[in-house]
Length: 438
Image (cartoon, rainbow, N blue to C red; front, side, top):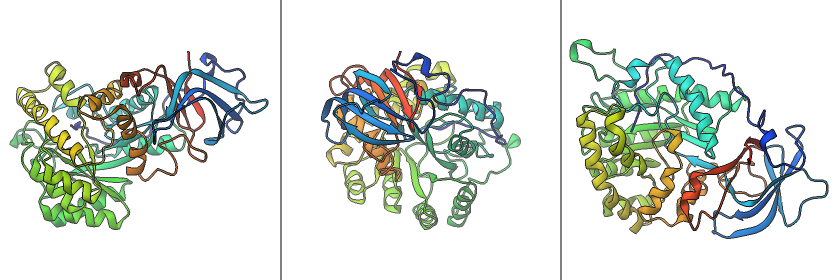
């Protein structure tokens, strides 16, 4: 699923407190932290080791600056303590299919035509706070159709502390054939938009589009390997970019040190993208066993995005989806479980990705479990697996000394009831409390 956003991006000056500011008054804290480098200790009732599933009771996590220093059995003398003794503590979560710009609740194919880049970026700043509120301290944006690369501006603004939000890796535009799932021009032929830089009908044009995204700061390249659902013209069954085009995109991107993801629903497009060497498959709805085996062999990640298909079938008509889009959505949903089960049988590596508004970002946990993952595996998809795919394993994904102090807490035991992940009570990113326990 993608959103249509166009125009020029703007530099954001958001009137909002930074993480940790105006938050600590609600926290259960025995003494407050006076500056960002002061040590603070989190008293965890249960610390979940997301690698093993082991819960360590009654431990203390020492945080200094933005890093975890140590995990102790008792509080250091004189420590300033955040009391999470009744909660389960986990590492911050990662949504690796999070379109950050615009109003993600508008499913209409023309939504981007009615919103400026400036407005979509302001929506983006708001959206980032909503993801943080739900414990997502890291995101990967799988591409936008904003000509001004607003997602890059948001990533950089978070990085320098201009606005609060999760850490971000971002794709640029959607590299797409003319008339494909990444073609933002849905207008009549006599009202057509100027041709955009992401449209590529030859391998040479793909190379140019990839280089343009790299030029303007993309961390990832996004390919439209097949048609999609959230447009009025493409067929999700059909391979769009050719084998040669995808191989060229991967060659150019990998040479520049960038990773490549491919939107792919149909079987032929999934297989072609995997053969081309992409790093991740987004959706993978019609994945078959042979292609799943190939993904497992090559180490290609799968982001199944289950919940958004269910959501769209349920509320799509009221959010602007056309009858043709809804028909496609229902057809994809019927195919989804078989493709996911093929991935499980072949031990394809799964990463958490939602592809919907941040308010429902935690819903994918329950969907993954309903489709066959164990609760721990679903949590791993949003923590250690996500960190590995993003090349961030040494920095995030688990609560260990030396890593970023990205820490969340929930009531109850998510290994017994995965839906507890939908009620995050506490959020810390980089040692700063964003959401305090109330």
